[in-house]
Length: 114
Image 1 (cartoon, one colour):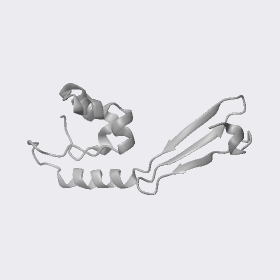
Image 2 (image 1 turned 30 degrees about the vertical axis):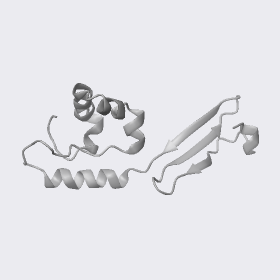
Image 3 (image 1 turned 120 degrees about the vertical axis):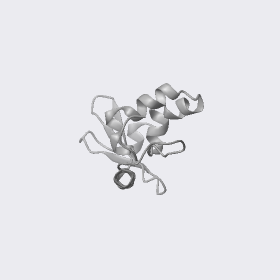
């Protein structure tokens, strides 16, 4: 797709080019004015974060055990982060590092370390 085909200028406006009604993901492009185009994907995760927070609260004080749900990974992050590949390859070390990373805390349904 060429930016000229989309008829948008160099005014720093984001143009919505895709909206998925099922996942809620929206894809925008922006003409940077110097021959480059930026692409932005926006994935709503508020409901995932709220659900994880509720589960974390309910699981407070409970012990870890086999079969416990660690958390929920948004679909886009599942593939873009390498999670899908690590899971397919049974890379437990990578998966532990993923879940123990402080940036993923809000996705977790249990406190503590995996």
